[in-house]
Image 1 (tube, rainbow, N blue to C red):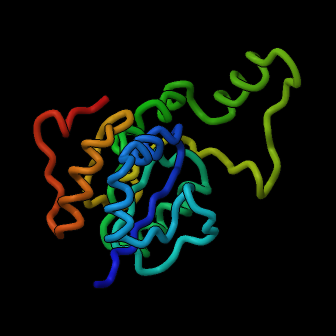
Image 2: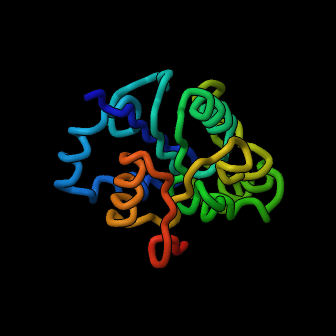
Length: 180
């Protein structure tokens, strides 16, 4: 039996969705029997591969690196799951949007509110340029499945993965579709 190629991606977010993924505990052993983890912040894999069957994308699109990665992820993946409220709606990551352009946000955070070392971080190639607005994943690329929650709990993640592994489109209902 060929294993499905599974990836997880972390864009602009807190990594809480990945922590909930790890809360699958013993079921991760069952999952590992069915999938090959080909890319994840949980593994030391540098380049997003071709031919990914299923990807869970955590976080909103907040900077140029996120933008470049999500386009590559969509191009190289069959099923893209918007994983958690930041990916689905922008959520907490998008709270900077009302402040205005990134320069205002950076000035407020790193200059006006700083106690020490008042400077805006900048290092080409290391600190990515912020986008004008933080966007949910579906504003940039097509999304196949939405998995809400901040973060989604392990039971919700497992229910969605079990459906997807059976080849069913995940249509969560009731408590499983609740945001927040």
